[in-house]
Image 1 (tube, rainbow, N blue to C red):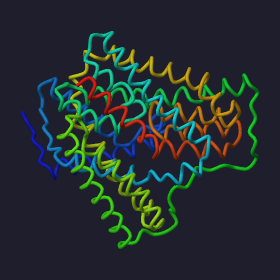
Image 2: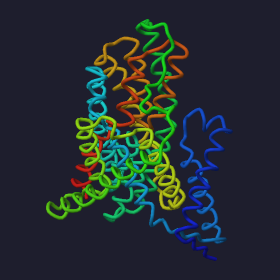
Image 3: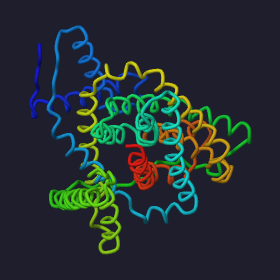
Image 4: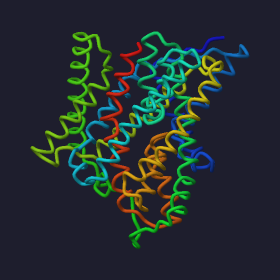
Length: 396
């Protein structure tokens, strides 16, 4: 028996799974502790159900995910609009060091993934999907680039990326705290501040979003989307270099944001941009995860687990022996290592959860709460995206 869902029903189902996932994350301690995204929870549960139904011959469900690309494009454009280089000046030298370390991590993660793929006699792009795409990029990048890689003829790339991102997300939440505890104990580190610290407020959430402001942000977003996809397509046609449309849109958005900052700093309203980004990311992820075919990656479970394990070992060693020293070998540096581990293997909420657990026990760190969310939420993709795209073009 086959059940074919049309475009509208597929969107309804993706939103329903997102809402259900949000409920489960609030109610299930494990999901809440490790900051597992709600669309990942709802989408994966449906994917498991669809796999079981297909395996036992009960039901074969097909979905119309034709609007998934639009939601993805919108989300990555909002990420680009958040990348104001004024934030780099605000964070100073520590932010630049941390940012460069994130760029190096993306390169190292892709090198590890591709190398391990050769070891297991797999296509190198399969290894890349368990590299920076799913580790530092998280579920959003894994879903976006997974589709791009599948379009190049690599089957199961999307499913592998999602699985690796999920493993990495859990690992990022598990290892951050113990790493900092080791550093604090070994070097007898103490916080330099006594007052409470809070996460950097990147948007003014006290103001009500006005209709005119919201539509002005939609105008900016859709302009960046249109110009970015056009330039990306033009660039790919002229050079033969694969450049997905959403990447072009994101980098156009970075340029537009920083031009507007010079002309009118109030032109970009990050509260509206953030809301649009959250909505489109949630629907995009939910739709992507509920449509993955888990049965396609069963034979790759062992290589995938080994690659992710090596990624975890590498980031822990790099954080302890390199990044900690580069950032000043003090308490603030240790807390930033916790954040680095969180979003280097999972996502920015992981980083914030790691730092919250550490600062609650050992004391506050204003510098860490300034640097980590700025880089993790906005600036990291400026380095990671070109590295990922170059890897794809090297091994396609």
